[in-house]
Length: 124
Image 1 (tube, one colour):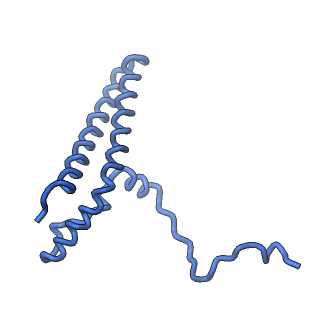
Image 2 (tube, rainbow, N blue to C red):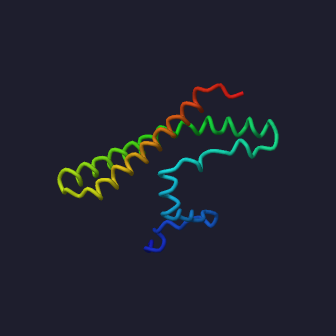
Image 3 (tube, rainbow, N blue to C red):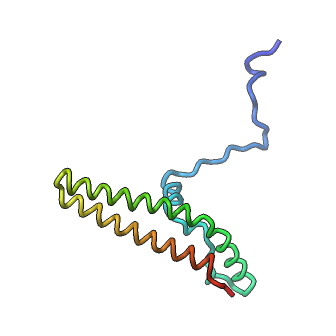
């Protein structure tokens, strides 16, 4: 005869729950990619510098994902700017969203340049 207590899955003692990431850090990592890369200038010798460059080149494969996210933000901000300007006749609010669309477009340019440099430049 089995009881409800026997049928429940009990985690093994060595299976500790993984703590959840705070929302602010998760949002930061969702939008910004600097946490993926190592600082090459902080390396102490040629071997560490080479390892950091190789790591950065491997991590550059995730930059198109961030580019997609930022392009969505750019289009969303621009669409809200058009909505507030044309439909709701709110000039100040539309200027706010148009400004943010310019800021996010600048972020897209930075991501694109970083991706091109890391993938196609010859790093010695």
